[in-house]
Length: 127
Image 1 (cartoon, rainbow, N blue to C red):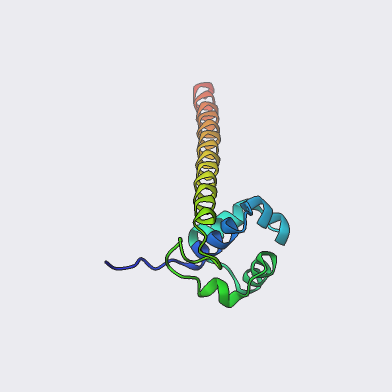
Image 2: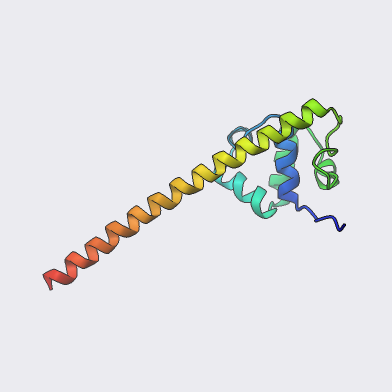
């Protein structure tokens, strides 16, 4: 079975979650927005200066982030099953938060599109 390569953003997310930090915690800790942290974790696109800030906040080296194992259950510094279960629960909760955030964003965008559409309709009727 081929192992799927994980990108830098996945590795950051794994360490952050394992250490019990939320995206908000990391964002505040390095002076960025939660949305930007989400972008880093989804895409893996992080410049070297921001990566250094993230590593510093998480108390790991850049090399530790880059060299994390592909297996989420054994990437940690300890392979304690209870910690792995906690890590997985944290990941699930964060995914739920991310889904809710995206749902709310989509709803707001749909509402805005509807309002813009209504304004266009009103303008075309007045003409």
